Amino acid sequence: MIEFKGQITFIDDREITIKLSKDKSITLPFHPDLNDFNIGDSISVGLDREFISNSSPAASNILNELINPSH
Image 1 (cartoon, rainbow, N blue to C red):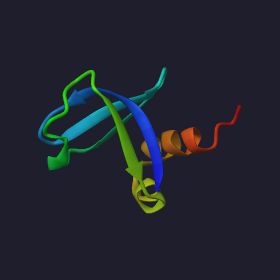
Image 2: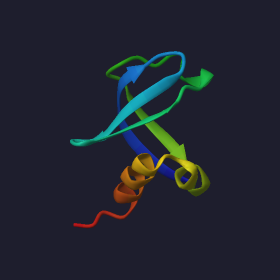
Image 3: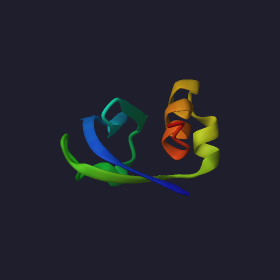
Image 4: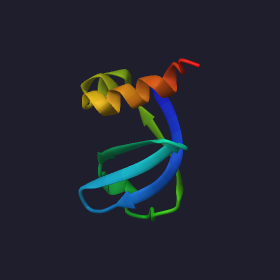
């Protein structure tokens, strides 16, 4: 499990977008446990490697870049 911290920039009943760094955001499926969160809230998200591997190529690249920064 890898933990990412960020700020919610969009949330509805289908998806949530989290800004993970200055220029990286990720959109994830909404989960009922997120009902009490709002735009602007800070959030920590734990994702396992299987979820990251099964993400879209763009999302997977963002997450892998955050795990293993190239610079």
